[in-house]
Length: 313
Ligand code: ADP
Ligand code: MG
Image 1 (cartoon, rainbow, N blue to C red):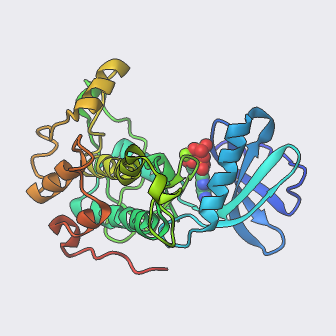
Image 2 (image 1 turned 180 degrees about the horizontal axis):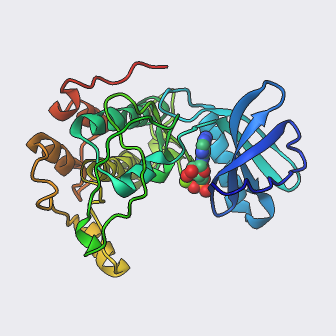
């Protein structure tokens, strides 16, 4: 491993000692840090204010506002929020495993049992957001699903993707996953999330009687964007490559618009019909037909043993 890069020092963040960089965003850096007041490790998302316009600033505040209201084992916890003239500091529960999901998906596929173990955690988080908080996440993807720790497991499932041509996966070894060695998965990044339902009344936000039908419909269907994304994540977990892919962005856009995907042989040959049935109810173009989170969770593939939803921590 390379020598550790020197960590920047931010005015207004004296309570924390930055240890390592964990991620990069367009306007932010995420660091592993030590909270000097408690001795605990945390993650700090440092957002550069000056690069943001007014709308983007208010989005950060909205992200924090939405995270403040959440409390669920499958949602990354917000610990504190502060700002200096130049930065916003979003202090989060540290997910030591980082975007391991992404890393694993890059090289491997998961067994059906392990996929179930992972996806049920994500789904419980989405159920909480949709049904209890009236929130749509709108950016569910492997980069925003974080592992609480690095899994210790010794099996490797190299996968040669259909579009990889003759390129073999190079021997970079990422520990594979067996049994329960994988820990917890949590949903992060509420930067695009939106409150669509009033929590107390479970009615659309705004004055109900005066809300236009397209808004009411919009809000009903907006949750279904998370269900589509959940379908894409599940597909990717099971075979190691995403359902929609093309080198040309135009062709890819067209494939997504038509919902054109296949259970490509030989990769999908040994995957159960039940898993395929579930995916087909998520990757369906008509949002009115798409499974809701409750329909997802009661599908036989999800309720099958041996992987009941993990106990809350
Ligand atoms: P952006 O809006 O820029 O995508 P994210 O909140 O998704 O910001 O953070 C960017 C990246 O930083 C994530 O994809 C992840 O790799 C890392 N990251 C974010 N939050 C945490 C956390 N709590 N623990 C560990 N890594 C994190
Ligand atoms: Mg992100």
